[in-house]
Length: 130
Image 1 (cartoon, rainbow, N blue to C red):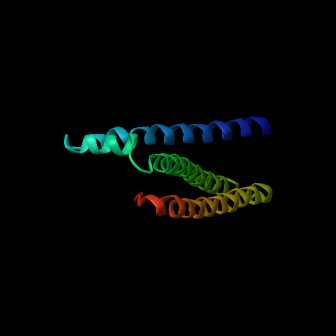
Image 2 (cartoon, helix red, strand yellow):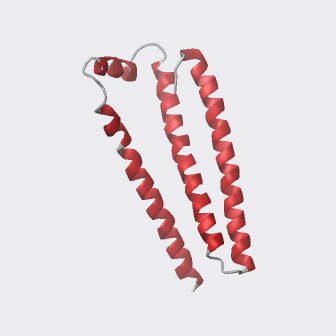
């Protein structure tokens, strides 16, 4: 019984993650349509070369990774809330849901702080606006 519930919860979280990744994959495609033909060479030059391009590349990779972790933390908060609501008064399930929400909130705070630190340190030398 417990293993079936664990499998259902795992599949639910996996489905939420795949949905979030699918939605995030459309953002670059959707934003590319708003570039005018004059902007494209500038965007390509900024992405492929120039002073500080390695720092800019590392900053983008870290920002995408932290963004994914932030989305995952929010999904875990939602999952903890759903678990809390559907606990039906069972003390063990309520305690488990509270732990999920608490640890997800702690993770979200750590992610936001690391985002601020990384952007301050890496963005200070290049003048990169994120």
